[in-house]
Amino acid sequence: MTDPQVTGLRSIEYNVPDLAKTSRFYELCWGLKKVAEDDGAHYFRATGAEHHIVVLHEGGKASVNRINFAADDNNAVDALHAKLSGLGISTDSTPEDLSGPGGGYGFSFTDRDGLGYAVSSGVTTHSDTAMENDRPFKLSHVVLNSDKVEDQTDFYRDVLGFRVSDRTERMNFIRCSPDHHSIAFAHAEGPSLNHAAFEVPDFDALMTGSGRMKQKGFPVQWGVGRHGPGNNVFGYFFEPNGMVVEYTAEVEQVDEDAYVTGTPEDWAQRVQGPDRWGFADPPTPHLRRCMGGDPQAPEVDIF
Ligand SMILES: [Fe+2]
Image 1 (tube, rainbow, N blue to C red):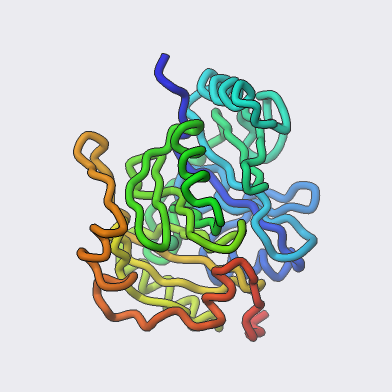
Image 2: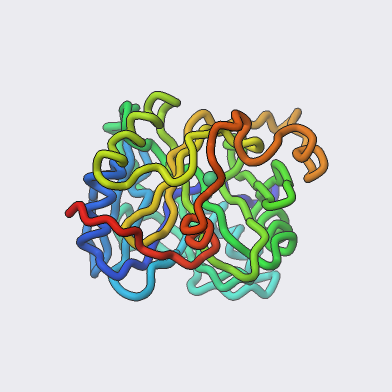
């Protein structure tokens, strides 16, 4: 049997101090739809097949609660759990049928930076998928801050089956599917959430969604631009608690047999700065602080 591996990014779960307000943001501004409520948590879907891509848990400081990955089937879930256990990595549960919205079969664990994850298979999918011109269709990637970027990269590669797409001076980009990156680790003083990105159908959809955000009181904070690694178009925003969310489009699709992992030296020569176009102004100090893992709620009152 080939090494078991994670094959997709399903969803991100957040702790938020005001569940009702943050829920309204994701529905009215960001373009998701609530599909379930369960025990103090709200679940939101995009227009794609994944049952939900965002979960909001009421209470506590704004922060990432858990990241959920996909495996191909129950055997892969079992094999990943056995691999983690064999390496002495504590898992919070043995694989089991999941009782929450979407169901499925999976287990959860905590990584060396203390962040919670779950791996699952067989989660209910939606059949009424669509590509809409102003709404995300999937969770694209999550960027995590860490003071142990190479250690985290090794863990994701060697244990969960990720491949390294690129390294830059600031980040390591890793993939578990044809998407150039589903996770990236940014060099920082310690572990925290940098941002989460949601993919929209194309550049026009990114601009249309960004326009809606502006009209709702959440103007773009960085962008619009096109990143170097991943070649994706980007626009960064605050959600109501100061955590950073990104609309992205045109994410590079990797050919596993041909892709050559880029080095910091390669990227320093290929692209000047984080925007290929040279159009986007640098991130504001407020945005940098929030991306550094210290969310500061923006001054906006639209509800
Ligand atoms: Fe991003």
